[in-house]
Length: 100
Image (cartoon, rainbow, N blue to C red; front, side, top):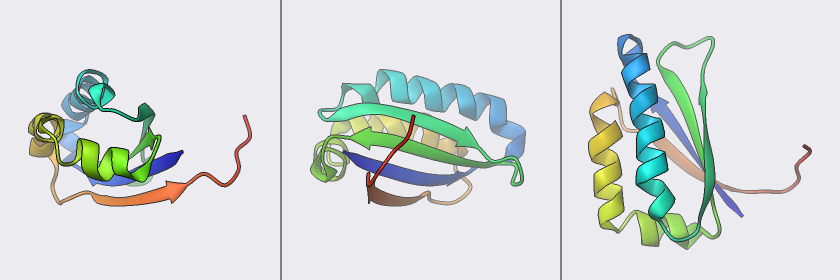
């Protein structure tokens, strides 16, 4: 499993609209992509307007090729991109261990 970690910054005044948009975009667009296995969104307590989006992918290529190079990515960015005050910082992680 690959974890895509996106550090997103938005205008805090747009938080409610952004939160609705990111959920809608993930549920209706990203979820259609091959290899998608789920997501979570966390909002910072200390930094208003900062969010961390974590998407679980089967493989790195499911994100970097099958999603990013597809029409789904264009649709996703049309939904959430207008909220960004700067480009998100995206990194990929391999799961080493986990506790429930």
